Length: 126
Image 1: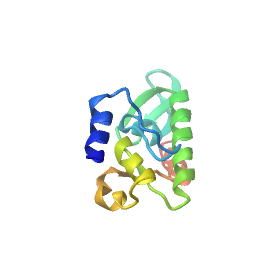
Image 2 (image 1 turned 90 degrees about the vertical axis):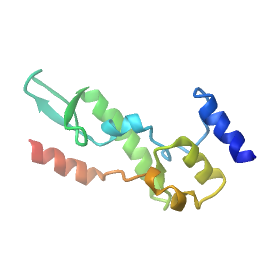
Image 3 (image 1 turned 30 degrees about the horizontal axis):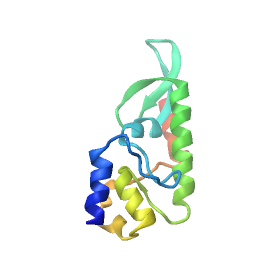
Image 4 (image 1 turned 45 degrees about the vertical axis):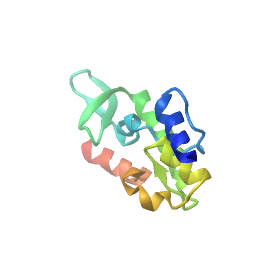
C-alpha cells in the first residue's frame, strides 16, 4: 500500500519531486549534456556543446559546462559504491528504503563516463 501511494504521488503529480541525494539521479533529458564534449561547429563558426550519444550540436559551450557539473556530482556520489539512476522514484527507493532496488532495476542505472574518457573523445574530434 505504501509503495502504491508513492507511485501515485510521483506519477500522479508530476510537479512533486521526491527528495534524493545530490548526484544520485539524472533526468533522462539531461543525459545528452552529461555525455557531451566541446567541438567546433563549422556552420556557426563557434565552439559548441556536442552530444556524443546523439551525434549533434546542442548549443552554446555553457551547456557542456552544465553537463560536466552534473556528471561531477554523480561521479562523486558513485565513489562511495552507490549507483546513479535515471528514474527519481527508483533513486528514492534505493536511497531511503531498499538498496536491493539496484538489482531489480538495472535498466535504470546510469554509467557516467569518466573525465578522461570524455577528454579522449573530445581530443579525437579535434
